[in-house]
Length: 266
Ligand SMILES: Nc1ncnc2c1ncn2[C@@H]1O[C@H](COP(=O)(O)OP(=O)(O)OP(=O)(O)O)[C@@H](O)[C@H]1O
Ligand SMILES: [Mg+2]
Image 1 (cartoon, rainbow, N blue to C red):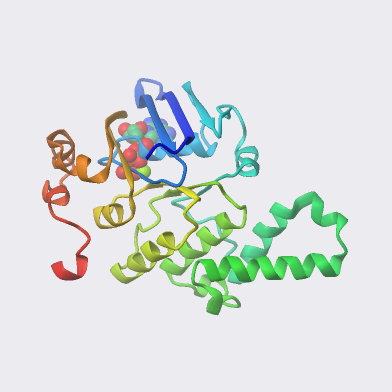
Image 2 (image 1 turned 90 degrees about the vertical axis):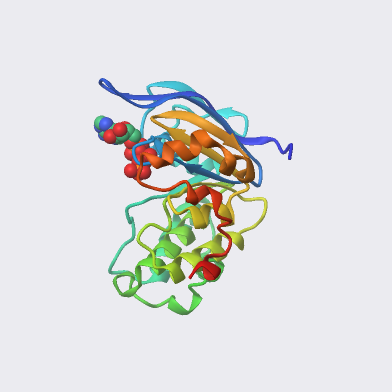
């Protein structure tokens, strides 16, 4: 696997006064990877994620995306370049329908060029794009359902549709399955599995079942620093990684059980 890196972090550091949330984290996310960022509570995953997404300024270090230094670019400029994040906290317009929400995201992407098109063409384009994005996340039948009537899992699916509407090269997902039922989480894994192979995905995830079913590469953070980085089979064996999780109340069995068989464990 020698695909070029899409994203490179060089010594990324975030300090809040005396607290160091991330201490000099360097890593590369390769094209087409399903790259999972894991680690016990407080390891610095969300902080690192927010710096990459552009919602939190870095204290030190650099972020390079497709070979360009984006360390100081605002979030919308990162989205325009193909780096889009969904968040732990819902950013949906609750009284609108699923389709309304996707339409807003599509309109934002079409931006200025859409103003030049004839209105009729523009509405048809938006409508087609909305249909495509909803189908991509398995929500086509919920098109006209208001967001407040969607289940928690469906809202998370819709957030992915909004992110897809920006045509990301790199999609960032922060704990997408948090709060999901096992069946919602299964559906979400299938959704991620169905995304185009050339779309690179960086995912922060607590659920090891989800991690080991999706990830082609793992980075483990612990106490703000990089503890391990490599293929999932290698990381699973590492005693230092298991030990880091033991302090979190999670067991080493998280890493020793083959976790592709949730159904078999039930
Ligand atoms: N705004 C802030 N001010 C002060 N300290 C913060 C702030 N945000 C995060 N921290 C601290 O930085 C460290 C890393 O936090 P972060 O939220 O990135 O961890 P995490 O790995 O995402 O944890 P979790 O698994 O609980 O989501 C923690 O010690 C946290 O308390
Ligand atoms: Mg977090």
